[in-house]
Length: 345
Picture 1 (cartoon, rainbow, N blue to C red):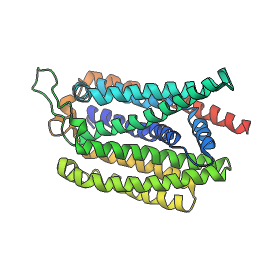
Picture 2: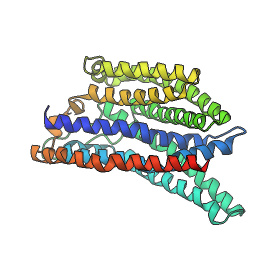
Picture 3: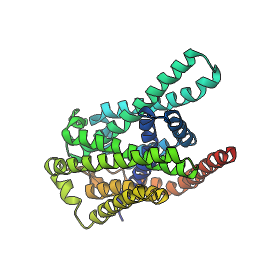
Picture 4: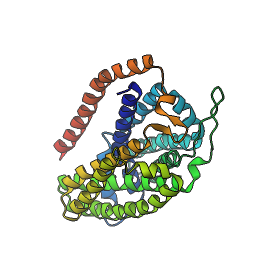
C-alpha cells in the first residue's frame, strides 16, 4: 500500500471516531435545547451526566484529523481551509461557545445558589450550549457536502489556492448538513436511552427511545432527499458508492440502520447502541472509499496532494506511540468517571 493511502486510511478512521463520539456530544446539546415534557429537568440532568466525562475530550479526534491532514496532505489542507474558511471558522466558534456554556451552566448555580440572577444566567448559557451544539454539526455537514459535490477545484500550480467561497451553500451541502445534524441527534438519543436503561430510569429511557425512533425517521427522509441530489450534483460519487470497493461498507451501514431500528422498537437498547455505531462508521467509511483516490473530485488526488515520502514515513512511524498515549488515556477517563457515577448511586 502506498504511504499516502495508508495515511488517508488513518485519517478516515479518525473521522469515523469523531463522527460517532463527538456526534453524540453535539446531539446531546440538541436534545438539551429541545428538552420538554414533565421530565424536562431530568432529561437535561441525564445529558449533562452523560457528557461530563467527555464534553471536550472527544474533540481530540478532530485535532488528530487536522494534524494528519496538514501533515500528510498539505495541498488539500491549503485548499480546504481557503474554500471553506467561513463554515470552518463558524464551527470553531460553535465548539468554543458550547464548551464554555456547558461549564458555566454546570458551575454557576453552585457559585451562588438560589439567586434569580444565577438562574437567568444558567438559562442563557443553556440556550447558547444548545444552539451552538445544533449549528456546529450543521456547518460541518455542509462543508462535507460541498466536498462531495465537487464544487471545490484546485488552482494552477504555483498560484494561490482559489475556490468557490459559496460552495458550502449549494443544495447538496445544505441537505448534507441537515443529515449530519439529524444523525448527531439520533446517535445521542440512542446513547441516552441506553444509559437511562442501565440506570433503571424507565421514564427517561422511553423519552429518549421515542426521540431516537422519530429522529431515525427524519434521517431516512433526509437520506431519500440526498440521494437524487447526489446523483445530480455528484454523479461520479454516486456511481462510486456502488463499486466493489465501497458498496459492501455502504450495505453494512444500511443493515446496521435496520438492526438499530428493530432493536429500538423491541427495547434492546444495547444492541441498538452497537448497531448505531456501526451505521455511522459505515456511512463515513463508505463515503471515504467512494471518494478514493480523490481528495477533491475531480481535480486533486491523494498522490497529487501528498507530502514527501520522508514526511509520511515519519508521520506513520509516530502513530503507534500516539496510540499508546491516547488509547489508555481515553479508557482511563471513561473508567474513572463512569465508575464514579455508579458509586454515587
